Image (cartoon, rainbow, N blue to C red; front, side, top):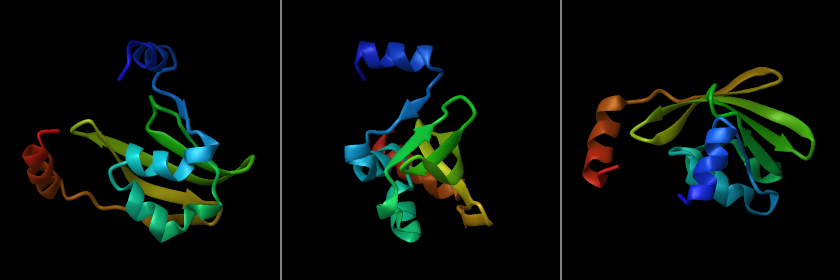
Length: 110
């Protein structure tokens, strides 16, 4: 991470808006289970996400409308989305197997 990006993250308390042109790529690369979630929820209509940083909340937008609100946790410097809500309630719940992740991350030396 460049010094400029580190400084911006410190000043913004970790808040981050995705780029609308590369929403899918950024979403998948930023979250450990991003690819799985992208496919399960069919986020192809979505255009942008906002990572609120300090309070581990992620908002997913389609244009100017927020369509999903997500919670995530950090583990081994990886962000793992744990649950996703839409206007009708819970649509996704990810039960973290910390033992499995421990083995996987220690092999990768994350």
